[in-house]
Amino acid sequence: MAETELTREEVRHVAGLAMLEFNDQELDYFKEQLDDIMNLIDILNEVDTTNVPATFTVTEDHNVLRADEGINAQQKAELLARAPESENGLIKVPAIINESAGAK
Amino acid sequence: MNYFETDLTKLHNQLVNKEITSVELTEQTIANIKATEPKVDAFITIAEEEALAQAKAVDEQGIDPNSLFSGIPVAIKDNILTKDILTTAGSKMLHNFKPIFDATVVEKLNNAGAIMVGKANMDEFAMGSTSKNSYFKMTKNAWDQTKVPGGSSGGSAAAVAAGEVLASLGTDTGGSVRQPAGFNGIVGFKPTYGRVSRWGVIAFASSLDQVGHLTRTVRDNAAMLNVLAGADHRDQTTSTREVPDFTANLNGDIKGMKIALPKEYLGEGVSAGVRETILAAAKQFEALGATVEEVSLPHSKYGVAAYYIIGSAEASSNLQRFDGIRYGFRAEDVKNLNDLYIKTRSQGFGDEVKRRIMLGTFSLSAGAYDAFFKKAAQIRTLLIQDFDNVFKDYDLIIGPSAPSVAFGMDFTPEDPAELYMYDVLTIPSNFAGLPAISINAGFSEGLPVGLHIIGKAFDEDTVYRAAYAFEQETQLFKQVPNLGGND
Image (cartoon, rainbow over all chains, first blue to last red; front, side, top):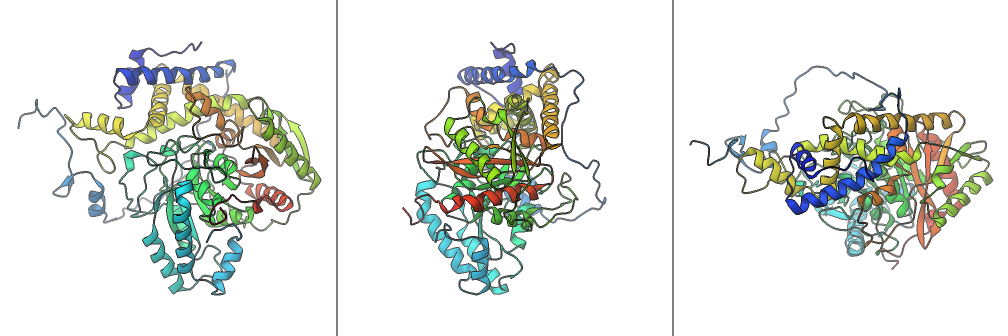
């Protein structure tokens, strides 16, 4: 059995961190699937990694710099055209707090 | 027209000699795509108007006798940005997204005179091994339409294998070019990490992602890398190393080449038909004058588990940008900004993407980081050391590019981990950033078996030399599926 089986609360917590929401049925489904994946991942505990350095990238070059020069891309209209909603040259979003709670 | 009987050099000569114009070639290509698509569903978008305009411009300018791709139609995977042409990454999240610029690889193909005829179907955000995770459609295997084309670059592979185009671009994070190439009996190549720019490619796992490309022959594939390779200041992981002519040494001579065959690559989980085909390929290499010896890559079996942690962790970070604000899908009927983010992401992403975001977010969360993300990154080091040890004594490593031939469209394991095992043979080269190719090694159960050849970092040349020698000896590329007028 997976040592790392997640609780429903943990799954809900992780969903919150990832900005995802699940109803009860979906939560059960994702919990079960994550537990299956955790089972697969448990195999890594067979390996002693004491003093083994971690590898996060295999790129040869580090700290690649470019000239610090501004560019004028002139892409405002094109960019705004991609936004789901825009108004007066700005991207439109809903209120940051609840409409009902917010004072007009 | 289909592309079964031709190759890049032949077509280039016909274009240069004015036996055909690029507009005619493009028209015939699109007509054949439209006739073939009902069977394979390789494309999300066919860019007919744009392609014909591009072809007209190339014809007017004159075919460039020094550019093999001048006037040649190609397909592009739908997670690679094409200016003003729908680019969805196979997701509802980007169902209406038209980029404002071309990816570097698209720019390079354009500059070489290539004609972009369409955007190829894929697993959503390149996550999957079947292309069934697409929001739009299910692509079918070119050889048998009841089988999957593999994934995530399933559309790119099926389009080439079905004779719809001569070449396509894909992306490869854990095998997403090589596995579908293997399932479709064509040539799929993942270059060394840093060889080809990812600028303008929708990121999945940035320490693993590479743009790869698919063709019918090895020579065409090497010629395409000549166009795509090179440093790009907009992708700071690209290498400034010199880019050689990858077609220069394709002469069939591999005498004295030292090839390793890891026992783990033919072990448990690999079908008998695949094992026999790969062992026969090993014999073929020996007959060509190479030596083939069994070696061990002892940490291979940990690759999949480490990959699903690292790949998902990086994906969970990269996919944070999809929030419904600036482009793409936005959920309706929301209470406030936070609700907009949550509803957009919950309605815009499919299940496989959500699974990986969840796994990745968990692996990076407080309390889990050391036991999961860091542990996987340490296992990655051990996998790389396995390769380093073998490459001290050998030029290349061979094996299958998937444990079986293409499986049925209706195969849906209850446990997602079961499907993840299909990447076990291709993942390690992404971890180490090594160049690797899949070419057709023969057939089992009537379907192609992919031969996987892995080389040392930045030694694409040796990979291509061996693949070319094998291909020329076996002539397997001459076998084609019953499509494109052959049906």
